[in-house]
Image (cartoon, rainbow, N blue to C red):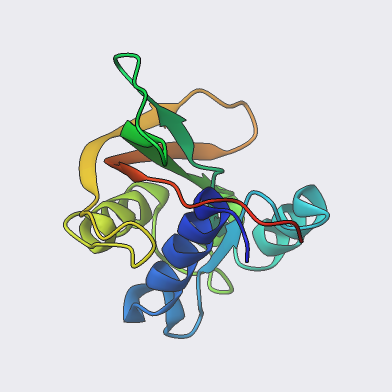
Length: 154
């Protein structure tokens, strides 16, 4: 069994890929940060369609020390980064969906959704533009809380 945080990340990827906004042709690629050779995949997707979404590795934090077992985290954050190559994306071969709209779609489709691994709904924290010389970038941050399960060796 995979770790709770990795499973959460994969469930977020699946949730976004299941939405018609992302899956209708031309499909907007949603990748996990843990994917092999991610940098190459991002470059390929941006070169072809002009936009993609990267679901980052979730971060877990406990605001106050706790002796709970299993560990229960008061905050589990998930950041989705949107990369847009504006020249390619807004051309006839691109997705035609601007980066800020993709960011809003990520926020819409994840807010209030409860990943099976935790059972608690994701809450939106915000959408933030990120300075980048090469791309139009946005980060969409959601958070929830919950317990992680006992890790098993892979």
